[in-house]
Amino acid sequence: MDDRQIVTMYFARNESALAVTQQKYGAYVMSIAQNILDNLQDAQECLNDALLKLWNAIPPEQPRDLKAYIAKIARNTALDRYRESHRAKRGSGQVTLAMTEVEDIFGRTDDLSSEMDRQALVSFLNAFLKSQPTRERNMFILRYFYMESVEAIAQTYHLKESNVLVILSRTRQKLKKAMEKEGYTV
Amino acid sequence: MNAKDFLDLMGEIDGDLIVNAKQPVAPRRAPAWRKLTVIAAAACLLVGVLSALVLIGMQQNVGDELPMDTETVIESPEESPPPDHGADSIETPTSFDTTDQPEDDSQIDAPSTEHETTNDAPLTATFSTSMQDIELFIQAANGSEEAFAQYAEQSKLYHGINQNMAQEISDNISPWTYPFLLQAENCDDFGATYYISYTPQVLDIIYKIDDVRYRFSYSYNYIDKHEYEGKTAVDTVTLGNYTFDIYDMDGYFVGSYTDNTLQMSLKIFTDDLNAINLEQFEFRKFGS
Image (cartoon, rainbow over all chains, first blue to last red; front, top):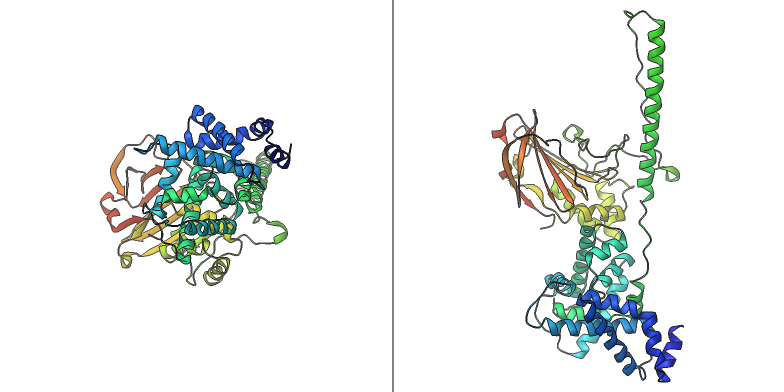
């Protein structure tokens, strides 16, 4: 069943939409959640939460790309759950590692003050990513959107882990330079 | 913006980017120039073996025909032709110079034989003036296309090394620390060569100071056993963050360290242990 048909089921409030979505994208959502939560049970709960949020969002939302839409919901849900359970301290896991990697560029200061800043930055980030070579762009997204481990990315691209680390580091540096050139404080 | 904000923002990037990042990746294939090098190496090996068989056959025939005290002249097998890189007709150089100065090949040895090597001239990038040559190369490799083209023109970089290859070299070199001489005027001679067509790829950096030659060989993505296994260490040295033993190999001293996927072998060509002075170097990354 294609995504347009599934979205139509949501609009028709046909509860089979949830089962169909789970069948088509359940494994995909679980992989995103497990990268972040590192726990099968938490990831399963995250999947259930994501499906519920999808049910509540559509309609009025009418996502053009259902797969990407549910990926974002799953990621945000998993990150919220992760932050809740790690509020007091940092643990190990891909989220902490990913934050550590980008802290050398973005530091820890909080100056993202407005929604307008946020929208502008998202547009900037999209443009930056699209300007990168495909391999570098996809690796960056696998690491910082999907929170995949460096080992998993290395296996996907048939590279050594050290090569992946170097490529990610170089892309982070390019992002930093591009942001400084645009006048963003990093 | 802090790291948390950045990760949150990554959650809002375009859906196309998110979905496309998960597309299957085809297995890496060796670039054509590397395949050709392997084919050329195999061809030369075959020629060498056949030549040896012919020679053995000739010797046997000569032995049968002549008395034992007759002096015979045995022809050495013909030199293997340089590899043919196919339709592009790129001639394989033995080495090439990134500067205008004549190159002193006597100061630069080929990588040690425990590595797999071709029998042909290796494809190399040579930096014959200073470590700053290598820094310029790395900057150009990671710069714009125009900047790289300009660098290649000005440095007379071999045109067979394109920016993709240069970036691969830069990726190998960049994470590690290297020896920079604290007082450049003390250096009698310097040479550095990156061997691209060897497996693994190797960067050799050689200094000659007060008649002592220091050769630092960096093998990337490769760990192997050492020539000094079974020998007793004669001293311990420290290079930056790495401390390791060195061994007397009759004519030179050798030691090495490994760091994850890097193997660094240091050979110091002198008979006098007391002549070794590693404190004249500082160890840092390129560009730091």
